[in-house]
Amino acid sequence: MRRVLDTTALAATFPLASADLAAPTPGVVAPHDGVLYGVNTSSNGVLVWNRWAQDNHNSVVLARSGAGKSYHVKLDVLRNLYQGTPVSVVDPEDEYVPLAEHVGGAIVQLGRAGVRINPLDLPADSRPDTLTRRGLYLHTLISVMLRATPPPAESAALDRAIIATYARAGINTDPATWTRPAPLLRDLADTLSADGDPAAAQLAARLAPWTVGNFASLFDGPTTTQAHSHLVVWSLRHLPDELRTVGTLLALDAIWSSIDAPTDTRRRQLVVVDEAWLLLRDGAGARFLFRLAKAARKRSAGLCVITQDAADVLSTELGLAVVSNAATQVLMRQSTQSIDAVAEAFDLTAGEARLLLSAPRGEGLLVAGRNRIPFRSVGSASEHQLAVTGIGEAP
Image (cartoon, rainbow, N blue to C red; front, side, top):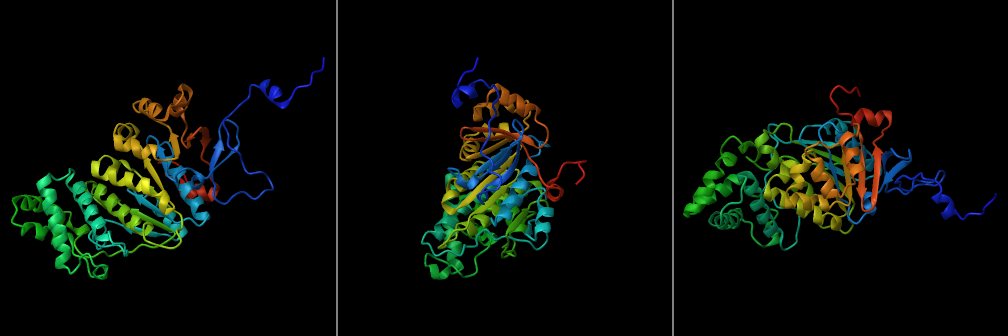
């Protein structure tokens, strides 16, 4: 018996299906914006993903320790560099330093002797609200330093002191004054001490470790580093644990100042924040990161947030907001303690949850809108040598 079937009916007779994205057609030049993410583990098809064509350019990578998230992100960084996209990385453990050295990037080692950032520096910006925005940033920074938002009386005293400290340095609302040498954090503390308000004196005392104590070396003088390169790695390895959240915030502020600078033509940039839980665990820090995530697209920037503490991040409203604001979401192997929170946040099926509990190193799930693609990160021999970070794994 012979029967004529149209293609739709014929396809229904083949119970073979896998989630896949259209791969480049052989012989046809592929668009320059997509990068190779790896191989689809269901179909063995090539997975090419273009973050810059999504609703926003942000991504989030969630995985337990040892699942291969750093390997995946390093390949993503390399392949964006191939296409001429500048990349900045906040790197707590020096995992990206060899990569920067190999490609001729710049490395800023916060915590090294003589490496300082003055948080009171004004960006090269003539917009009328520049001084106001710097004051708001200082409120955020000091909240992160103190690990709590100052009470109302101290916040009011801080606001007065910020204005007075800039005024003593000859800096006011006139943009012509903004190029003058900026005051230092210890100058702000001195202004608080001289205020006469008990709340100001209390805040000055709480800031003492950062102005005259053990933590002062990071701020004790004008900024000594100006990093400009196609790849800039902000290393936090030499900072004590107590300073790493502050270091993350300082690095992100410096990166954002370059991205947000007024320009006639904006060039897309990728910003990678490794171990983002350092900032997300802090209320003021999480709000700062969320604002960056929301504002990045208008500046042609993409924010890549990486963390291994998925359950902790997803348990907070701001952490969930940062994750939800990423159009590209990469999930790799999860712990049994976090899988329920991950499954609920990303609306995973039971099969997808099982996949993430047992995924081998380097394998995961790309979640982007309706796309759910299981994949394995792959690199050439030279890329692998640069990207491998696993203990006991030979480069």
